Image 1: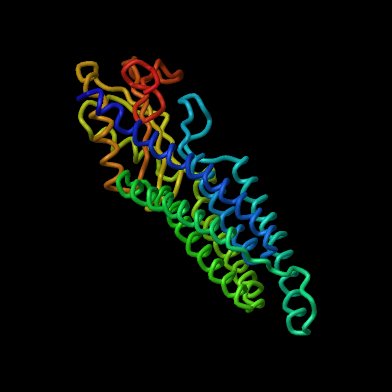
Image 2: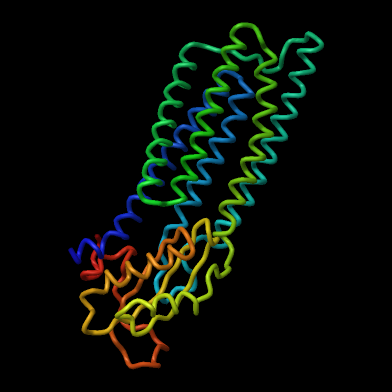
Length: 324
């Protein structure tokens, strides 16, 4: 029972990481197929919809990075740093350039339709392409349902947010499929109209994703360390806690890391004590993910150097520092 309590948080984090990692690679595969299909059928709307798939992939990537752990002697807590912020701004630049290019091509297409000229990009819909898009829809829907279910079971906002982006991508892909069917029936302007609308929606989705992820990218304390220390000391068995860090947005999701010193007589109950502290923090501040480093008892007031630690709810098995 003690070993299970020790590894419960660790296993939860591993499941979240596995789901996000699998989702990321599947979304990148879906993105490549969509771009290839869009180029094959010369569809601006499908190319514009690929922007949404790209956004979902980047959002998944950023969410995946937020669950990595830093060691007690590291300078950062859970979350993202300057590299991920740069990636985000590069994404915005790429989306801006691609979006403007698609809007320009769409404008040329609309003018061609109005003047009755031969279209520069004449959509060539085929049944095999429609079948491929159907497979992509089913695959994305399966990933979204799995992410939403596990997000509710594990109470992890990143999974729920990622699932929401996937459901939106599935819906937009179905809209594009409907547009291609319309083009098949002779409504050639429908592909261009959808392309314009999807580019505008991509800009709105990009803002939503950045707004959700950005609080986790900023080096800013989410909860005052002294407050977290007070909560921890209210749990019986805790003699001291230090090296307390937090990042995120209270009410949305907060990552917390702290070192604990447990009374020697209660060392065997360290996982239960850590669990109670996490529950107390969650009840007060909402969704949180906490990594505890359980230290050996040392002399009071001598905390200049971190002693050997045992990690709970992190990457290592607290029983002996082995992979769980």
